[in-house]
Image (cartoon, rainbow, N blue to C red):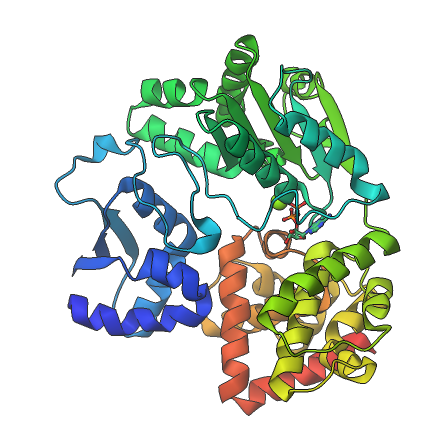
Length: 452
Ligand code: ADP
Ligand code: MG
């Protein structure tokens, strides 16, 4: 296979990863060779290689396989650079607007989303305390509570608030070393440093920051070595009076599999939770999003009552709410008419029905395995043969459509699979539905059976 062939094959990833990701991460990859089942790509930096490997590695392997190549592994290498230098700071700047101005060049953080700032965060009763605490920390005065521990269910705005703090701090004090990353990325960095025998650099890097933000800290539950390292980093920073901000999907004491000393450390500052949204907050968020969208869709009108209807009916989480509104706008602009109640009900039938009665992933799995006449254990299990893989993707797709579970949560219920695998499955089915009426019919039937 040549780099040119790859140039054609990679286009199959466009719809799966989206335009921005495609331009930032996929297009720059240069195929160096395919040898003994190992496809090697050249990347400008190790950071980029790690990122692509972690987020898109599986997908790349799959498109290559689908194109008829035998690929058992995908590797990334930086030209003229020994492997041991993997902790070198990342220098590349993503081109995407949302990711622009992200990490300081020599800091180990993840990109910040420019839409997640304080201006776009709608405050209501359920999140006012969390918001106030975040504001206080973002002022960057003397450290009063350390750490700030934010917790709450999926899609309630934890990540949004953390990014907002980071943006604000950087705006006020551009020389401040603010690092935001997920606990998973922290672990990934740590494991990599271990592997590359580069722990000193790792420690120095993390101990040199002024503000450290770790998102979704529940991820390190059960991962002992990572916890240990996190604990040391944490203590070193607290000793220097550096601000730490941590988020989690549950309270510190409820995270099973985290050492007691870490739990007590996590609780030692200010612990605030984001409560599930209420009607007023949801309406407020919808109104704000409409304002944002109306720049994109200038001629679109919304009938009175539509937003209220949505705020009533979609009570799961803000992410679902946003997705629904986005779809409504896209649909409205497509058909070129006012967004009426009727259009809303048509266009969002699945979301609205899904929040009527709670369909569970387990129900979906049972129905789908019955339908395809396979065992539930095979549907969830590791076997990759198509007779199981396709129904599995169907079940993942339905879980995404009919429940409010996030991709990682769905992945967990499918034998601990990664969220990218789920995303790939969902996209695959979306694609097949266009081409294969049998699949489209199957899905319609299953959906009706589940919603009955
Ligand atoms: P979490 O990290 O708690 O799972 P996120 O911060 O990723 O949730 O929020 C999910 C989506 O909902 C994001 O697009 C975010 O901007 C939006 N969102 C959540 N809460 C609010 C809010 N109070 N105001 C505006 N947008 C919000
Ligand atoms: Mg989050």
